[in-house]
Length: 169
Image 1 (cartoon, helix red, strand yellow):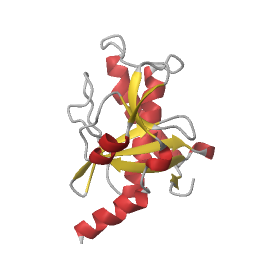
Image 2 (cartoon, helix red, strand yellow):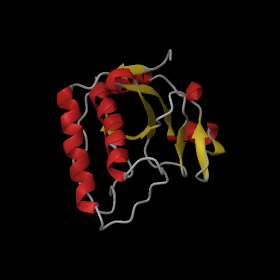
Image 3 (cartoon, rainbow, N blue to C red):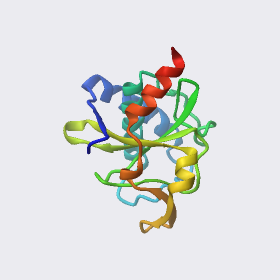
Image 4 (cartoon, rainbow, N blue to C red):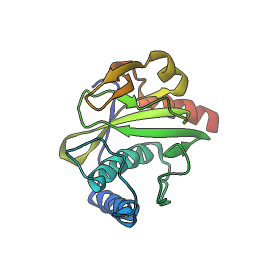
């Protein structure tokens, strides 16, 4: 994909991700009802996948992950903070998959990540909350209606990085 960036995850990265996924998942086992709609993957596998996406974006942007663990999910409605802006990271397992939400998101930006070969992650692009609101359409992927934006509509992640760097200096 022309506007995407592929981030390699090292074995150290993957070990940190696994530790964090277990930290987020294991205390909830049998205590918190699952909200997942994916019948093919368990909660731990979904946590691993989501964290791989979050880790790839944090690595690319040079910001740290949120290591807090909450029994009922995050208290904040975002995954990362970059240059004072909040970011929600979404992973879609389909190479050409859409950026989608159950409803509009609260973060300043949403970033779509998809798995890439050899354990890497591809940052497909991003949208501001306003762009997503204006461009998203209702789609049903078989688990109920979602608001979705196609990958080709996303902006290159390099733009977000350049915009934020311009603000930081």
